[in-house]
Image (cartoon, rainbow, N blue to C red):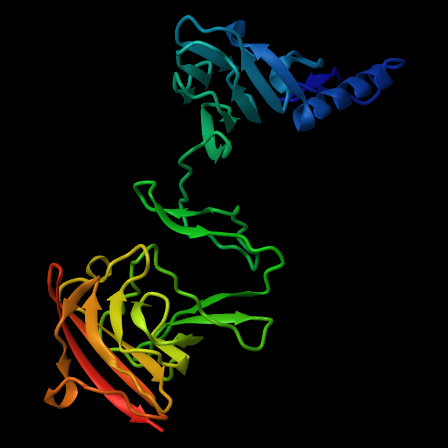
Length: 355
């Protein structure tokens, strides 16, 4: 019985009793062909026309990975002979803005568009060359999933300052790396009748949650809110109240002067040194702050109120502005600033003695 050849890789199939003295050489060639098919690489000119599958010999079409090269002057077909069944990883390494197609002799194939110089995994089923849809992700700038992505209990690693973009390729969420981080967010969904949760979790026992607007933007909660407890920012300063005191509402909710007041004083309510109340507030919004002033035996009081450097006449609790401070006490001034229009404000104020 004579030797035969395998259908796809064209290996020599030796018959019993054949090839005395050359059996080992033929076997070694078969092993080299198998090595080509599993891990072989070859750069092949796209002008080759048809990939070769020579019987009983290594040949370019038997490689696992093929890089097609050369300069294209027009659309080119690279042909896999009919009846060959094999998987290929093929890179379009050609130059020239022309399409490149890998196909069978009489069937259909897979085409690289003129600008596509990427890598595709394809297979020939003996009739047609088919795209497996495993693409070169490094070259594919818009890869798409055909099903849900299951991380299989693994994490998704995102480079710092990168994240998730929307369907228009606009930034939606950005992640920033902290070296040796141990605390994080946990997002929990919920069944009917329950609320989803955004929680702070991690290794530390007590962890704050920081929500930081940009510039003088604000954090907005829509709908009815429920706050279990709050801690307001207070600035405590060994300063005596006198002259004009700039109250920066962006940096504190309470300002406490612990040294005895030295003269009657003006309170100028502003955003901060760079931002006015008019800039940080919208019409129809209000801000409430408190100013704690220490008095000794000779007390002084707030006799002028300003917003952004312009004097306003507050609506004082009880219907009358204070005319003196309270001796040996801490006077608490409360100011609720209501923006009624552009650069227009109404201030509701009170003075309360604590002793």
